[in-house]
Image (cartoon, rainbow, N blue to C red; front, side, top):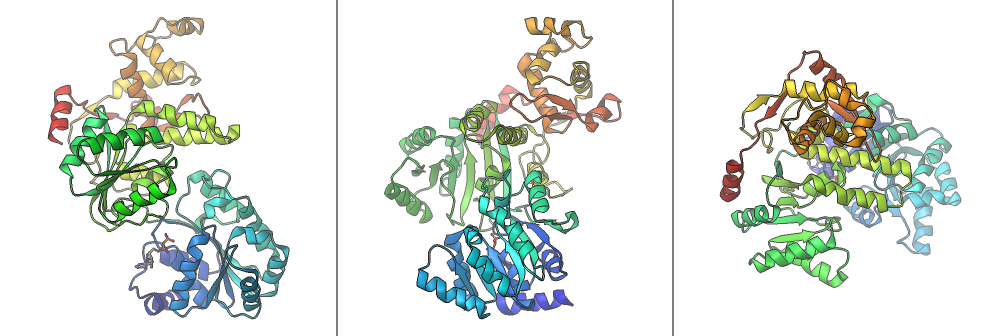
Length: 521
Ligand code: ADP
């Protein structure tokens, strides 16, 4: 009944016929009086999830958001639809502020947008206690978590705000990026029950994910750009220096390439951005400084020349492809050594030890994305906590038609070696024991006496380490957090050791095939 009314409002106010995936569930929870956490990708339609309930509930909906620049647009759009709303943040004059606050007091608005800093003002909090707040929407809710990538201390004031309002308002927390850890944090800090967490809509049906490895990156790039001339795309590189080098190289080959990084002047940056928006240049070579706020819908490919620090960053950047719904490529040029750049950035940062360890953990999951042979889209969705059993049938792994070979025996060798080493060591040490290295350290631990010592001596240490990476990516091994992760066996590994589960791996590409593919691409 309530949902029918909500749907009518969706049609009459917003002009949409159907709720998008998740919107209806979130709205139903909110109208049922349940505090809710909604996790949806950018552009998924989070605003409607509180705007529609605000029209159905008596009293005011308070929207807390750190995105000051977007508040005006939102409020203008709502006013156009005939929904009385306002925003209160540092961008307005004192005079204007007084007027708006008086408007709040006199019940002139259905929706009020505020920046979290406003919660530091005792007089504002007093005002909120004098009016009827029925719903508090916490936008960008990941800002409440110290584990998130954009922690805002004033977000922690939200708890106190909620506790001080009677009757208790319903809380709707919304975010586009939340790892399991961040999601748990939001849930606990805002007292949201697990059954009222809605994660949805992260799949992007038109994105084709690919991981390219073992190829010369520059050659690959040139071939790809030649094959896709006339298509717009972004190439992300890790450092300013790399951006400069790549842009020079591409421009030297006659490709219209712009560049963007924080070391350039404001004017140069906006010139390139403008040219890119108007299709005057084909590609933008950029650091991760490029992207916030660009809204170009026909980006046909996003290529990561280097490994990003975590999957949140990767999915956000890669997701700038294909906003118009047209098929687009998201390609990661994967070179495991790139993790050193990211480790360096973590090490150099001012984060405390605990956070650094957490960042290392996220980096390892990013690495595992490069190593996995399963569906890439599914890997990403699982990372974000969205359960999805279907494979995308589009990504590089789903469309990889190489034969699968049975590597159960090899996997058993690795896993039993780890077990015999008491699950206390990392990849390098394990690979050394398996290949029978004469390292002094191995002898001092007595590992040369293990039955698994040298059991894979026909392989190189690098090949063995690669197999270990594969087993980690596929969930047979779980690395601990920290700078020097120790590999532990998982339940899945126990099944393999007991002979209850087979391990299959795509046949390694022969050298001639790599060369051929490179030429054909
Ligand atoms: P988010 O805050 O999740 O990034 P928005 O709330 O800004 O996303 O919504 C993104 C776009 O989707 C907006 O243009 C919005 O009007 C549109 N939209 C939202 N809900 C629907 C719907 N049910 N059907 C069609 N379009 C929708």
